[in-house]
Structure formats: C-alpha cells, structure tokens
Length: 253
Image 1 (tube, rainbow, N blue to C red):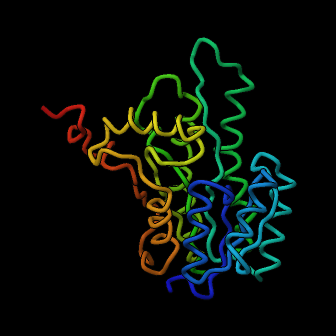
Image 2 (cartoon, rainbow, N blue to C red; image 1 turned 135 degrees about the horizontal axis):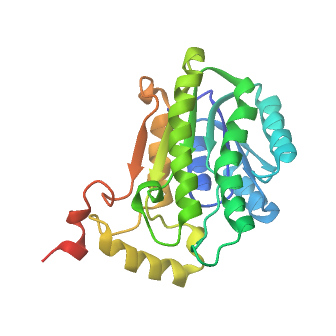
C-alpha cells in the first residue's frame, strides 16, 4: 500500500472527487480527515470510510472554522503528510447579470479558501509532505459565462507553482490535479449529469466524462512517494479535451 503510515487532510472530502480520493487514500493505508460544510453528507462519508477516517465540519470561506478543523485533524493524527485542497464551488457569472457579491463569493471559496487551507496546514506538515490543489480545465478553456470560476482556477494554477517554490526548502512538494468534465454532484441530479455528459463528451477525444476515481488516482500518485521528484506539476484528467481537442467526435468526419 502506497500511503501506509501517512496522514491526509482533504477539504470537500464529503462528496465527488474529494470523497473518491478519501476512499482511495484509506484503501492505500492512510489515516484521513475529511472536511466539508454539509453535516449530513459528512456523517455518511465518515461511516463509509470507517475507523481510519474522521470528519470535520467547516466551510472553506469561514477562516476560524477552517482553522479549527485543520488544527483538530493535525492534533488527532500528530501532524500531516498530505493535504488535498479540493473544496470549491462552481456557477456561471455572465458579464451582463453577475453581481459583485456573486463574483467575490466564487473567488473567496476557490482562491482565498485554497490559500487559507494550505496556510493553516503548513505548520503541521512534516518534511517530505505532499500538497495537492484541485484545478480545472476552465483555467484555459475560455468558456462563455464562467469568468469568475475560470479566473479562480487560473489563480489556483498560479498558486500551485508559487507554493511549490515557497515550500521546496522544507522538502514539501506542491502539485495540481486538473479535472475536465467529471461525473460528480456539481452537475445536479442524475438526469442533469447525463445531459451534461452527453453534450460535453462530444468535445472530448475519449468521448466520455471522467469518473471521480480516475481523478483520485492522479491525486494518489502525487500524494505518494511514486512522485517523489515531481514538484510544481499539473496532471490533467480531461480525456484529451485541452491537449488534443481535434481528436474529439465533434471534429471527426
């Protein structure tokens, strides 16, 4: 098992990519703390993950609550080896109708919340630790109506590189997973997910959405010693949508 003896903190670990990653980390031998803002899904996730996981309630935009949760996880585990700053929110922000408050909300959770997570966790990280940020292909796609979300994920991409340089003297690696379309609750109910997958998969060379477990596998590589010389890197899990778009069905004769 690749994470035996390791401890991990995952924000947004109560659903989607975060929960899939928590499952995989536990299966690979880690003790895992999941942090989320929904008490009901947190409880369900903790029950599923079992005795090697703890669940802590906090919103990434609530600094005192986030600090309390991270400090509690570090105290429970005696320190941290892995942090997956995964929590984030989506939503459209069209130019003509978006309020300043809505735009700021997305940046506060997706950018400031990510920075706060790593800032609070940093004193608890042991030498040789791994920090993983969750990005998005929206950082480079230019999708109409998603200015705030795209800006937030472009910022995460920059933060990954900056913190890789900043934490390198402590032997702490900082990398990023970058999902494309993935089958998670962010799309809504099952019917909405199916409709989004059918529509968007036309522009994906592999012709499908990723499963959360596939993104989790990339996070596992970055968390483990298998990536011991990987720092400031980005693993894109998007079925080729951003690297080789002309292989997608929409362009095929």
